[in-house]
Length: 177
Image 1 (cartoon, one colour):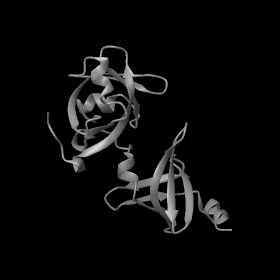
Image 2 (cartoon, rainbow, N blue to C red):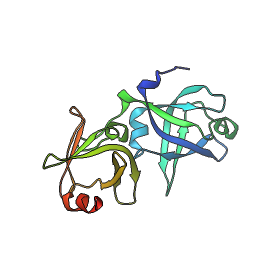
Image 3 (spheres, rainbow, N blue to C red):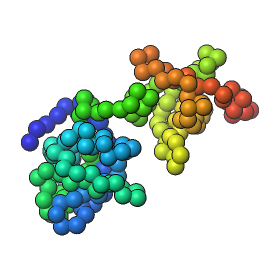
């Protein structure tokens, strides 16, 4: 059983419950697609014992709300039950994404600016909506919700820790009234 440093791990889901008798687990995925799990090849699961264990990924089946995950070494309902409520992590180096995709952990903490240069605030957390994500940006006591759509997000610059948005100046002014 391999251990990994917590800084190397990224939270990608949570085990909801066992599924069936052969060790499948129903998971709530924080990743958009099953490929995140398949490309990683292995996951780290926190069990009820408090220990984090590495398991190879055999298969991932997307459902309406949840994924079904089959892992090496988890072959019975009883074994799967030991992971109920446990977090699922993968190693950061095993993450893959398209050039215009970003992981939530990369965006949280970035400063947000209008394309005019005006600072809007800092991304504190992200909400998942049905059509797109919503960045929750704070500046002091003020909270601003920014839709994560191409029409609004003009640039994400991870190196300089900033996001540039456009088309929201009027909306931001209304929020200050």
